[in-house]
Length: 87
Image (cartoon, rainbow, N blue to C red; front, side, top):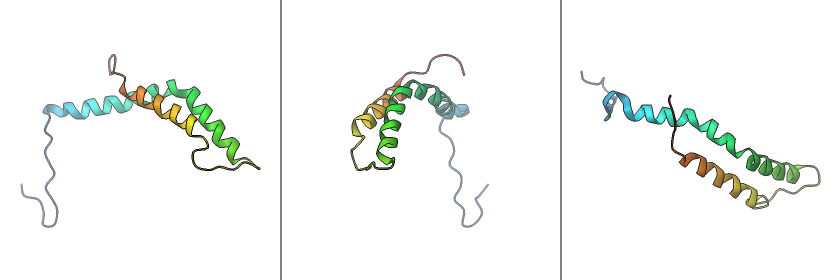
């Protein structure tokens, strides 16, 4: 069936039975649980930002860079962990 004038045809999926999209959905569902392991790093970064934005504080670039880098590293490590188990 041809696409109506002015509309592009919808691309077909290259995977059988949506296998690629199933893996993507599975990774996205697991992400919040993985990031929960970074609670200490998130709390440290949050405390730094909060302290620098409190009355008398001065938030400026790179003030909380060490805390942010620790949080970023934790997120990156969590994202790389292989999926285990079922759904």
